[in-house]
Amino acid sequence: MDEQTQSIPADAVEPKRRRKSAVREYAEAIGVAVILALVIRALVVQAFTIPSGSMMDTMVVGDYILVNKFLYGAELPWVEWRAPGLRMPQRGDIIVFKYPQDEKRDFIKRIVGTPGDWIQIRGRQVFVNGTPLTEPYTKFADSALVRPGPDTYCGYAYACEPTVVPPDSYFVMGDNRDNSQDSRYWGFVRRDKIKGKAFLIYWSWDGDRHWLRWWRLANYIP
Image 1 (cartoon, helix red, strand yellow):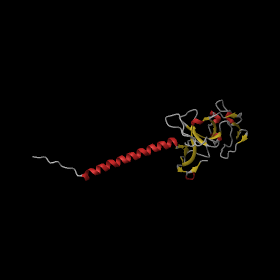
Image 2 (cartoon, rainbow, N blue to C red):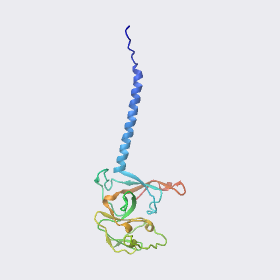
Image 3 (spheres, rainbow, N blue to C red):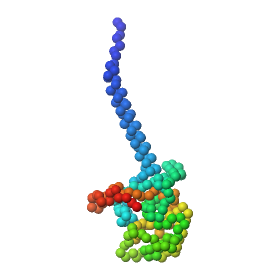
Image 4 (cartoon, rainbow, N blue to C red):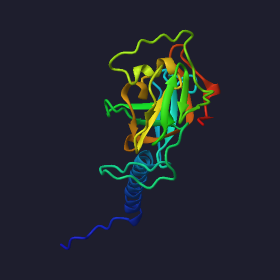
């Protein structure tokens, strides 16, 4: 007896192919999205949180910020090269950088002195190249009585001698001057340790009161 071959209807195979094609499309879309997110994070914009009050009142604990990494030239992953930047860091920029004493930690401060500047601090006044620096963003305690110690940078800067900022380095300070570990303690920030410039507060959460600070959302950081 001849065996008869049973044919499989074409309409039964087509749904399986469509299912496989859909799974592949979703996998490819997710893969592309992940790659794009990693590239953007590495080269364009990165999110950070503010863990301390050293930049009050410009930024407060619980602010979530975006940092522009391509402005100064982003550090390329896995190599010791940087992409070309649009400009160099400038006085007044708020920057995120690798903490000089522990590069696994990120710090955020404001640039006060650029390469070649002479910096001197008398009391609460900062002088750059002999000229008083106008800083409307600063915050001070009511009574700032700080004892200089051997581990501080130029005696906590309240009567420090003029000091010159080295090449490819920056003198940075927190806006909350009496509550900030900055260049007055540990010296200068090297150019190659700067990650980028803070430019936007996109979210802010008050952890103590458990509420959203809606008035700080989408605030541009000058």
